[in-house]
Amino acid sequence: MSLRVLSIITSLHFHLLLPLILLAGSILRFNALSFVYLICLLITPLLRSPTVTSMQGLTGIFLKCLVPISLLPLLGHIIFHITLVAIATDKDPYGSMFTNCSSTERLVRQIGYQRLDRADTQDIIRLVAPDALLFVVAVITLALSVKLSNRQANISASLSETPLLGGTKKKATHPFCKLLLEIIQNVALLAAGVIAPSVLGGVYFIVFLIILTMWGCYKSYGPKFDYVRVLLLIYTGSHILLLHLYQFQFFQDVLPPTDLIARIVGLTGIVHTDCTNVDKIGFNTQLRWSVFVNPAVLLILYW
View 1 (tube, rainbow, N blue to C red):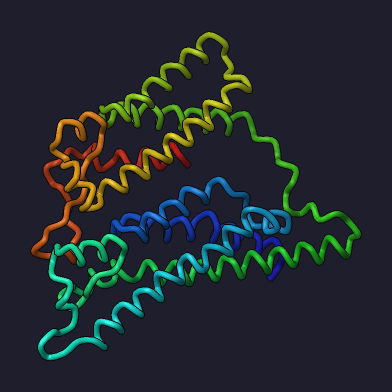
View 2 (view 1 turned 45 degrees about the horizontal axis):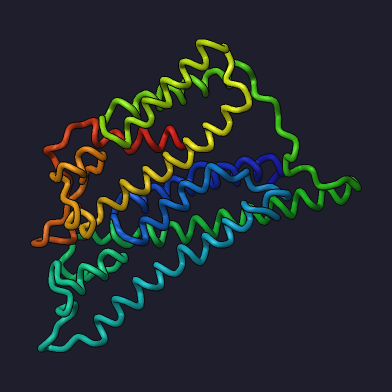
C-alpha cells in the first residue's frame, strides 16, 4: 500500500468513520457512556489528522486513550450480564433485582447498563453494539495512524530531513473556500438562533447580529474575531452537552420539560422513559420538527 493511499484511508477513518460511530453511540441511547462518547466526538474536530508529527502530540494521545475508553464499557457489559446470570436462582431469576424504574435500576441504567432479557433484538443491538463497534474502529484507526506515522518517519529519515510530513506548514485556504465556510457558519449561526427560540438560542442570534454588523462596517472580521470564534465554540459545545444531559430520566424528573423554566431556557425533552418498557427509546411526538433539527444545527455550527 502506497503512502498516499494509506494517508487517505487513515484520514477517512479519523475524520469520517470514527466520528460517525461516536455520533451513533451518543444518540442511540442516553446515559453516562453516551455522554463520554459525545465529549470524544466534540474533541475530534479540534485535532489534526494523524501524521508523524500529530501522533506525537494530542492526536496520538486521543487515539490511545480512546481504545481503553471504548474497551471498558464493553467489558462492563460482559461482566454485568455474566454476574446477573451467575447470581440468578429459581426464586430470583435473571435481573429480578432491577425492576423497572426502581432506584437501583435507574442508577445502573443511567450509567449505561441494564437487563436485556425483555428487550427486543433491535434494542439489544442499540444498547450494546455501539460500544463494540467503537472499540473495533478505535483499534483500527490507531493501528492505521501508527503505521502511517512510522512510514512517514522512515521516509523522512531516508531523506535526512526533519520529519515535516506531519504538515506543520498549513496550506493556504482558497479565498472562495474560505468565503463558503464563512457563509455556512453564519447560516448555521442564524438557524441556531431562530429555529428553537429560547434563552440559550438567543445567544446565537445576538452573535449573528454582531458578526453581520462587523462585516457591514469593516468588510472584514479581523484577527479579534478569532476570540469570538473560540468563545462560540466553547458555548456551542457546552450547549450540546447540556441538551444531551437533559435527555436523562433523572434530569427530566428534577426539571420536567413542561416546566416554565425549562421552556424559557430551551431545555427540551426529545426522548422520554416509559417505566413500563425501559428498553425502548421513546420520542416526544408532540414536539415541533424544529426541536429535533436543533441539535443537528448546533453540531454543524460546532464542527
